[in-house]
Length: 404
Image (tube, rainbow, N blue to C red; front, top):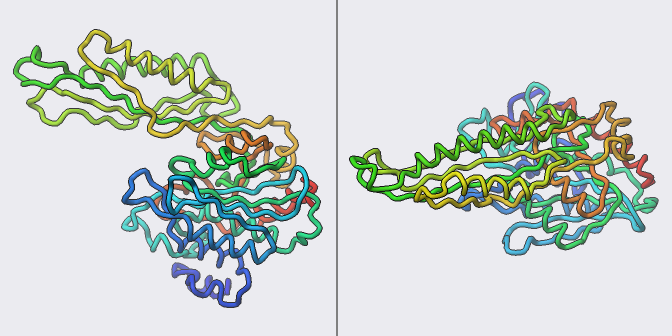
């Protein structure tokens, strides 16, 4: 079957209906084709947001066939959203192999093929989520399909979460429910097969200024929110510089915290004094920083900047913050994955579900096939050359965490 795909490079690699005809668990590429064909977009815009149950149910089917005990946990207040926790073995400790089931939205017009149909071309597998991160689950299943689960000395758990790309509601529910325990957790985000022991925290804020509109011919008739936002912008840039001078970590490629001025919306017409302005920013904070204190300092700075100007200022969180994440660079799990990946562990700037597994008491690491550079853009792909090394590393991980 794989050979047939190579002979038809650029065409759909597999049709979904062929994947389960035999009742057996298909190969890696067939599995990925099936998962890509199950849309599971999560988005802050309700019109684009989708359920992830198609992906969760399919993974549960395969893992049930392998002998795992599969439990699907609905996310409270989020119809159509659920986590999957599939467990084999019993006892203390154990290993969690975790990933998220959702993808970001896409614009099919910008793709060279249907985003929801896996295509093999130029030794790459193209499809929405192929890299970030539906591709992880077939690699996990391939790594464990020949395990004798009856011989497990510690629990092996596969976790598939909902809504990582937006609210991280799935990971937050894991923490709130306390339904998951283990010694180690490896999250399969695309890291190019490099173990990642730390990443920055992430929060998005909206700064809203409410002034007083009026006729533009006489500035005294109102309070210009856009002019006030100009002062706020200057204060934010000075705040960013101060953070960068105070906090640095040479373990990160971008060694300072970042503050990005993302988008600005203000006013409604040139001949009216601007009565309102909204600025959306994101802040990426280092593990050594107190996230709550930084946010409180920023809020106080904004209020102080517009004080006594007739402008009302509010600062609101656009999403629940994601904490920074750090596992000691010499931790057992880091050393195990350095051994099996043949790569020295490093750091990344993007955020993951890692801190939530840490909150559950697990030694946590990020490690997966594919590169973050391919994520969240048209023609997302997973390189075929990443598959076997990832499977081999996961098998080595299972051995060295003494599950078997």
